[in-house]
Length: 168
Image 1 (cartoon, rainbow, N blue to C red):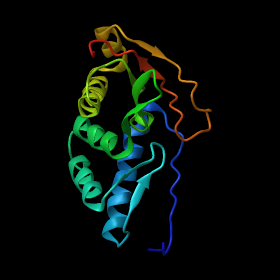
Image 2: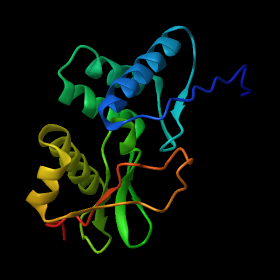
Image 3: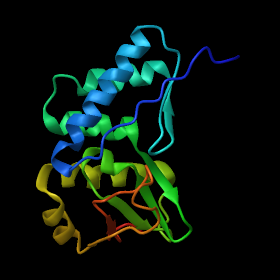
C-alpha cells in the first residue's frame, strides 16, 4: 500500500490550563479527517496510533462530556503507557493534557495492563484534584524530566511524578 498524501499538524506550545482544549481540538480534527476519507492517524508526541474506529470512539467519548471524561479520552488518544527505561514504567505524552508524567518503579510485579490502569487512575486523580494534592496523597515527588530536550515534541514541561508508591 502506498500513501496518497500525508498531513502533519503541529500543535502550539501549551500552558497546562489550555492543553486539554488544544488536545480536544486535535482529537476532533482527527475524527473529522477520518470522516472525510482519511485512512489513518497517529499522534507523534507519544508515537501512538489507533485504528479509525478507536479514534472515532475516543472522539465521541470526549465531545460534549464533562472535563474529566474529555481529559481521559484525550489522554487515551494521545499518550502511551506503560513504557520503560529499565528503572521505571511511565507514561509519555501527558503534557498534551497539562499533566506531569507518572513513574512507577520497574520492580513492580504488576502486569502491563494493570500498570496502565494504575497510571490512568493516578492521572484521573491529578485531573480531578490537582497535581499537588495527589503528589502529597501518595508521598510522591514532582521533578523535572531531563530525558528530552525542551524543543523535543516528547518533552513534558510539567515534569514527572516519582515514584508512585503502593505498587509492588
